[in-house]
Amino acid sequence: MNQTAQPEAPGPGGLESTLRRHVDQLTYLPASVSVAVKFIELGTDLDAGPVEYEKTISSDPALGTKILALANSSWYGVRNEVTTVLQAVTLLGLANIRTLAIGYCMAGLHNHLRIPKENAKQYWQASLCKGVAAKCIAHAMDARRADEAFLCGLFQDIALPLVHSVAPGSLSSILQDPACSVDYQLGREREAFGVDHVEVGRWIGAKLELPEAYVDAIGFHHDPGCIAKFVESDAVATAIQVASLFPHVPDRWSTTDVKKLSEFLRESGPGEFKDHEKFLVTVQTEFDTLYGYFEPGQSPELRLPDLMADVCEEIADSTMRMHLQVRELMDEAAKTGRLVQNLVTEHERVVDESRIDALTGVLTRAGFLTEADRIVHSAGRRAIPFAVLYCDIDDFKEVNDTHGHHFGDFVLRELCSRISERVRKTDVFGRLGGDEFVLVLSDIEKARVCAVVDAIMRSVRDEPFVKGKVAVKKTVSVGALYMPGSRTAYDITALLKQADMLMYEAKRSGPGKMCVGLWRAMTAVEPA
Image (tube, rainbow, N blue to C red):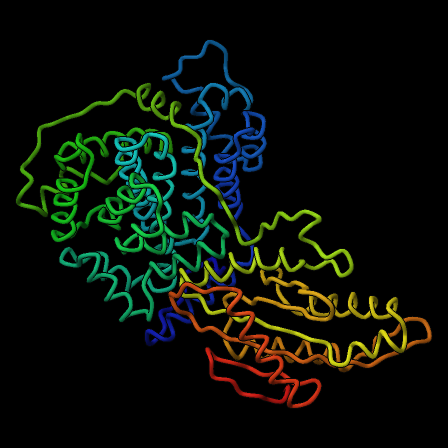
C-alpha cells in the first residue's frame, strides 16, 4: 500500500479505481494487523494460555513495551518490577490483554497509512469509542459476547483512514458537515468516490483475511436488515447498530443520528441503558480509562455527553459524573468468556486424508463439495462474482488403452500440476472422478475467467505429456459457468450440473474447446 496520501482523482470513477488499487496492493499484512488477527485467533482457542499470548506480544516490540509499562503502572503497585511479558500477561489476565493488544494493533494500522497525525488520532479515537460503546451494550445483554462486540465496533470504520489517504479534502468536507447523517454521508461518498467506506471496508477486511464475523460487521453495520440476518447473537447485533450511530470524527455528530440513537436505546436497548444519558456517561468513563492506557498522561478530545448536548435539544447540560474504578473495569473484563465462534478464514483449509485425492493431490469429490459450498455461500451473501469450471480430458480412454493405466495416472497427475500453477491458492480445485475436474474461481471478473480457462487449455494442448520414451499430446474441453455479483442463495450441485452441460456443449464443437455460460445463456467460443 502506498505510504503517503495521493492526489484526488478528477471524478468518482478515478477515485474508486485508486481506492481499489490501494487495497489490491496490500499484498502483505502490516505487522500490527498480523498481530491483531493472531489475538483474534487466540480468543477462540480454548487451550491457549499465557505462553501463547507472550509469544504473540513479543513479536511486536512496541506492543511488548506498552504492555510492560501498563503492568508496572502505579495502579497495580507491584513490589517488584515486572520485567517480562509473561509476567505482565499473568498479572493483567488474558481477556484484558486481548482487548488492549488488539486496540494497540489497530492504532498501528492507522499509523501505517501515513496520514497526518491529527487525522489519524481522530479516526483512532472514533474507532475506539465505537468499540467501547458496542462492548457496553453487549455486556449488559450477554457478557460472554462483550469482547466480540468490542472488536466489531473497533473494526467498523477501518476504511475511513484509507479513504482519507486517497481523498483527504473530499472526505473531510463530508465528515465535518454537522447536518450530514450517516445515510446522507454514504450517499455523498458514493457520489464523490463511486463507492462508500462500507464497501471499501469490506475489501480491506477480506484482503486482511479477518474472520467472517468481523467482515460482516464492517460490511453491514449501516444495514440493520443484514445485521439481523447474518449476526446470530442479539447482543452483538444490537451492539453493532448502536456503534454505527456514533460519530466518525470526535467533534461532529449529526442531530439525526443522535435522535436515532436515543430512540433505538429507548425501544431496543438493555434495561439499564434505556436512558441515553446514562449510557453515554458510562461509555465516556470506560473510554477515558481505556484511552489512558494507550495515551498515558493525555486526555481524549471526544466528550460524548457534551457533544450530544450541543446537537440535540433533548439532552440538557448534564452534571452527572460517573467515575468507574479501573479495577472494576479490569475485573469485569477478566470475567468475560473467550470469544466463542467458528472462525473460518479464506486462507485456512483443514483437510484429512478422506478429502484429498491420493493420485493427484487435489480435493476429492466430497472435499471439493464442502469447500466449494462454503465459497459460493459466502459469495452469495456478499454479492461477489465467481465462476465454476468443469474440465474433461478429450479421448482420455485412448491413453489408457494405448499406453496403459500407469501412463494414464501420470497424465492425470501432470494435468493437475499444470492447472494448479495457473489458478490462485484461494480458488477451489477438485477431482470428481476419472478424468473430470472442477474448479471454483472466487471474486473474479468474466474477462479474467476466460483468460484463466485459455491458460489452462494452452498448458495442456501446447506441451506433450512425456514419460520415458512415450510422448502424448492431449486437449481438454471446458465448461465455464459465470455468476455475476448478486445476493443469491446458490446451490453448488445445481451450479455443477449447469457447468457440466456447458462442457458437453463445448465437446460437441470439437476437442479442445470451451463454452462460457452466463446464468443460462450459453455460447460456444474458440480459445483465444
